[in-house]
Length: 75
Image: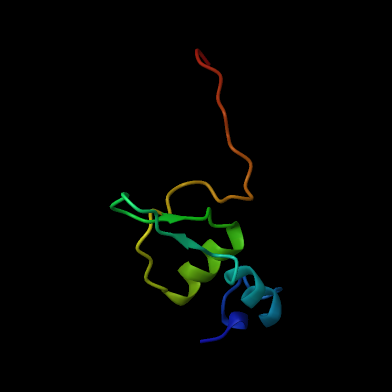
């Protein structure tokens, strides 16, 4: 399986994908039971999904580089 096998990654270069994935961080704090993770970018989420990489963090949050959608109450 390669990057070119996935439509959403096809236009990315291998060095670009590797640089992006190297930004992921896990932060362990004394006194905290579960670790913290840096927000995933859209590209990181695409790579994880495309290659079936198992993750131990909640990936349902919006990507760190995606705009937050806010709706007005009463609409």
